[in-house]
Every structure is written in C-alpha cells, then in structure tokens.
Image: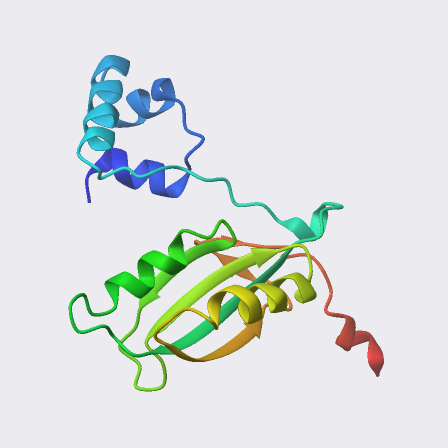
Length: 159
C-alpha cells in the first residue's frame, strides 16, 4: 500500500508535517500526493473513531441484512443507490452470502429510531424482500481500534 495512504488509514489526524518526517518527504510532496488522491477519487474522506460509551451522546449502531430482488436493467445498483442516500446509512455492501444480498450499517440515537427507519424507509423500497436487524450491544474493536479496553463486563460481577 502507498505509504501516505497507509498512514492516513492508521490515523487521519497525522499532520502533513508529521507524515513528511515519518516518510522522509517534504510537506509539499505530501500535500501534492494527498491532493492527487482526492482528485483521483482514491482518498474519499477521513473520519475519527469515537467511543460513544464515554460520552453523553445517545448512539446506537445496527447491521441490517437485506434480501433483495435485483432489477433486470441495473442489478443491485439501483436499490443500493436508493439506500445509501439516507443519512442514517453509514455503510452499504453487496455480500456473497446466500442468506442475504446487502449489508447496511445504520446509526441513530435509539433502537426505536433505527427500527422506525427500517420499517418506514428501508423495507418499503421496491425490490427489498426482507430485512433482519442486528443491534450492536457493545463495541470491542472497530476499524482496528480497541474500545474501552479497561472496562469490566457487567456479567463478570454476577457471581
């Protein structure tokens, strides 16, 4: 993998000065490469990973499996376009599973909010045959980062 992309994928908060020092390049070279990656559609964005359990923000993540009927003219693409336009949708993948076709990651403030989104917006989309929603109860690791590694599982204190 290209060294600048590797650094950005590890930590999007690195400054161009830091990356230049790590890669023995100039800041200008780093800026030019990053600009080219953006222009070429290689670098789509950078996001922070937040441990919402340590904040006062209500935040729920759910994975939703969708079984769909692909459309004759565009396959899964048209249905995917209808789905990824919703701001609640964080990611959308075409899967190789025989049980479902699309995997959607959705975020919201409450389980009820996500359930409403699934029932009122996802399920009625033409071509969607069925949905199965899985709510995340606890995140241990996401995008290579360990969450709350020093917290004790409440179940361990039940003995």
